[in-house]
Image (cartoon, helix red, strand yellow):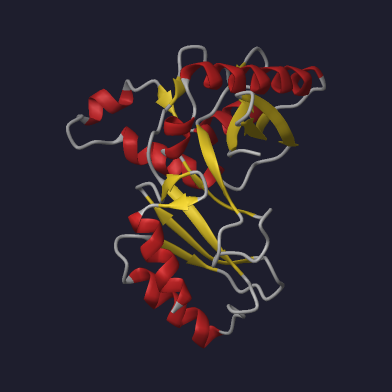
Amino acid sequence: AGPMFTSNNCVFQNKIIVGNISYQITGLSPFTNNKFTTIGNDWNLSHRLLSPKLKIQYKKIVVAVGEKLRASGWKGLFGIDAILNETNQKIYLIEINARQPASTTYESQLQEIKKKPSSKTTTEWKRETDITIFTAHIASLLNIDLPEVKLITIDDGSQIVQRVTSKKFPNQQSLNKLCIAVASVGKLNLIPYKNIKPETDLLRIQSNKSLMKNHNELNNLGQKIAKAISI
């Protein structure tokens, strides 16, 4: 029992890049009816729940998995899911996703936002050595070595997905109403889907701020979103 975490990582020909660790939002109502269903990521709560020692444990698992993948000829992105056992304070591997994980896109967008504050000039950005996780993925697939670059670190931002449930069975009218209700909460990016199968994605909600107060506990912004969805 304990919080779960995930990261998007990259295998290069001569190294493994460990991505930003995010807290894996799981099983919260009203977003899903399944307590084991992953419904989002929070890149801020992971920093609050994981001590430096636990982050080292996590990264050792990533590198060990990455080295096995590299030995098999793998290139580019892979994800791992892990859980923190709250009793003995150890990280345990749950799953290896040998593919481009779903959270890669938004993580890269958050990295781009952090990369471009208005204070820097165009010339300074041309010398920038920090890259997004998706840029690392493309570089690996193209056999481009990037010895002097590192991933852009992020410490905030989140996304949560409303799944298709018995209470949220989609038709265009109800989906439009749902989007309007959630949009009224504040500055959020909304991505609707046309899925009808239970527990598939109905509405992806993205914020550049955290949605989580603690493990399995929404913060004020998260509660406002949940309330808008429940109306």
